[in-house]
Image (cartoon, rainbow, N blue to C red; front, side):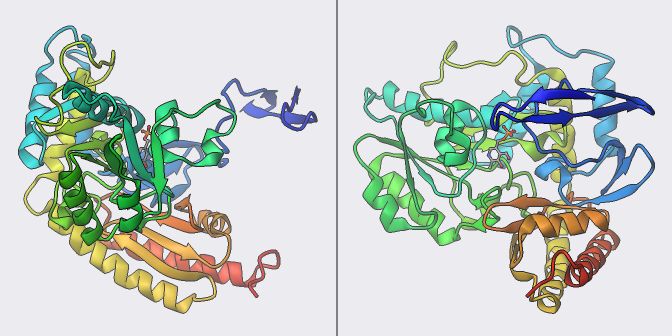
Length: 421
Ligand code: PLP
């Protein structure tokens, strides 16, 4: 055991990590995460299995990343086959897997052009740069501002924490990147009032994930589209969390009947392999010529093999319909859970297999109680517990999750430390 100076409080704390039966060493990992004390060794479908063989039902799916669950045979095959051939060449050369994945994304969405990144935040960086470049290309450098929304989350880079606008993430990192105006999620009049001659784009998550599964009204998205068209402002959707089949459509905005000019995608598109993408219309991408943007790793052959394999499955006939059917089944069962445990849960927010239970007691207490039942969930803003099962989840898995919810509620109700008034 080692004593380490705690910089925030000036006190000392003991930072220990077990590496063998009787040896403790200080962790060398930067402590930016408050981690749960679990170590998983392998995954199987909707389950994660610890080093000691305990099975956890994974309704967090790596925060909406493991869209096809763990160790999906088609993804394993695609990655291992590619690993035996070629890992990386850099973007100095053409990468056939990029051409294929970009063409398939373009074919199945509003987009004409795709830039590949390694993460959601990087996909957003490309979206933001592209919107500014679009206006600069049309000799309107003064149009550099973005309208974004309260409760938003777009990543942890300097640009994306400014886009998210949340004080807790901005604190201590100097002046935020200039040019973000935040308004209330869903408030059309506030958006209208915020548009100026300097506005480059409106940036919105069709469904806020970290913000607490807050689903934008589809009518609101349509109104944003109209406003953007009236004012020569670009519309950017962040579908990093809600995209790639999670709502039962390939992308969530399809439910609204309108399309953005630019869209950020990540998480599910790589099924667990780090992959992000910025999709855009030809018009919106017009300023992004050679040299304007880049990434060493973005779109490398390994990522492309997996991304293409994910699309093979998600675009298979019937896959998205099956997600919608499962979502309906789960929603009905969760409604029973909420009704029967009205002292713990207030309501369900949901679209497809992106679900949130708004709690009447602290959401982290509920997440902890579910962990005791070996059900993994993820807390979100607005006191919500997120349920983001892999899209390959079975009815049996969902029934088990509902059982865990009922049992956790019973435990919470009778636990001495969490007495519910
Ligand atoms: N945008 C949304 C909507 C997200 O949910 C996230 C991550 O949770 C991001 C962007 C950032 O993605 P990443 O963590 O891959 O950078």
